[in-house]
Length: 529
View (cartoon, rainbow, N blue to C red):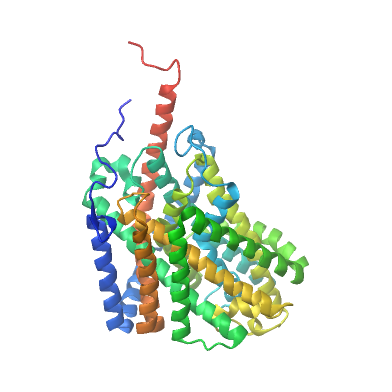
């Protein structure tokens, strides 16, 4: 059998050594220049920049809602198919490869990198928003009704369940397979090698990797900025610390400093340890809210939300003839574009820590396990929030005023509110640190031409840049600058949807090739001469 993966390209051959760094010549410099230009442009005119990128985002969502929706559905179906197909037996790294991390460490890292931040920010705010008609209701249900409560939780679950994790799984599995089984560099371009072969090492590949770097950096910087606002809101709510730009920037600086320390410690001593600590803290907070909150309602919510999720996943996945356009465009299509723009970052990080797993184990862990955990998490926190709204209890009963305060307003109506709110603030901060740390590893790998052993100073450089971009934009342009950054990240989701669809085809071709090679190498299957 012809081996199309027998390429003369060597990982890092286009690299140059400058300033103690080992960098991929075109990708590093182009990415850096684009970041600088964007930051300068946004600082000079934050308002017009936000208008410009918001316009591009709206155009993408209005004209290509069908592509985002159809693409996300394809990714789910593709991942489910891989679980049952014979290629599911293929092991990442070859038949003799063994996992680098325990199951719990592995899961903690992929979950912390994937959406830990978002779950803290939106697990209370999102169901409350849908129930109170803050910005549309799912499938046009009547707000503040029992049916509205069920729809609120199932729609939240829809946005944080199978679809986003399928997006991450496609990228993660593709990169892990082509890197560990085919010996290609750990960069996004490697996922297209079966389709374009050695052209992947040219300007087509440079373009893909550059867009991946920008999407990752902008997405992380946006999350850092909004996360600093949530942490500052929590500190103001809890300790009456003034929620000012200076406080928010101080939080970003603190998070960045710890992230740099974690980067220096490496994958084992940094991200892994922080992820384990974070998951332990999250589990304790979850258990506390479950016990002291409306426990009976929460148990019912888990069952009802799971059932409702399964019954509404098809109508919520449909984009034809929808009458709830405000909700559909403002939430679902926005989320799909956001998850897709984040996929290079999360997918590559998952690939980085998944060597030794089979394809089937990978898909089950990345697709199904987080979905089940999210179901419990949303039912506990979102269910508790809706219980308070329905009972006319606390600030949430009046609807959402400040999204960043929603979690703390819910906890305020439970015992030991000061302690749990402080734990929530710590969780938010540590989730930021793990995201910044893992994001730095990813950007470093791409801008180092796929090398896994690039100098530590490069990771430090990107960790600092993430914090600097967030802090500078927050200081110079405030909410408008962050909004422009978020809109820019969303715009990246449009071309990346097409890229991921092509990646599915490429990955399947690669898996079939690997399976055929394995079959041909078995005793008795040698060609007869």
